[in-house]
Length: 96
Ligand SMILES: [Zn+2]
Ligand SMILES: [Zn+2]
Image 1 (cartoon, helix red, strand yellow):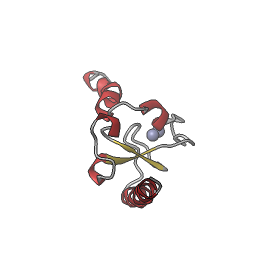
Image 2 (cartoon, rainbow, N blue to C red):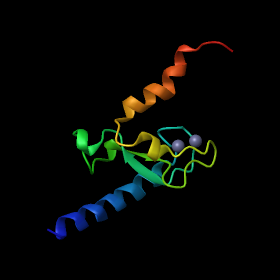
Image 3 (cartoon, protein in one colour):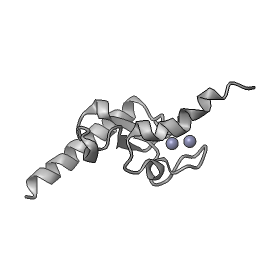
């Protein structure tokens, strides 16, 4: 039972590097310099673990240098849509 998890983490690291090379804009706060990736749909909720379409840049343990949020912590195990509802909920606010 050792082989598979090692393989998976290797594939995951490779995929993460690829995602971050393409973009480092955090999916949660929208700032750059993301240093981790997270699943848009958590694997525990049926998301594909190694699908590049299900992975996006996010701020990891160091947090965001701009807004100082620990985005990956904040997102936790929620689906991104559950979290961005909070972020984009200000869309209804059309004032100046
Ligand atoms: Zn962020
Ligand atoms: Zn930020």
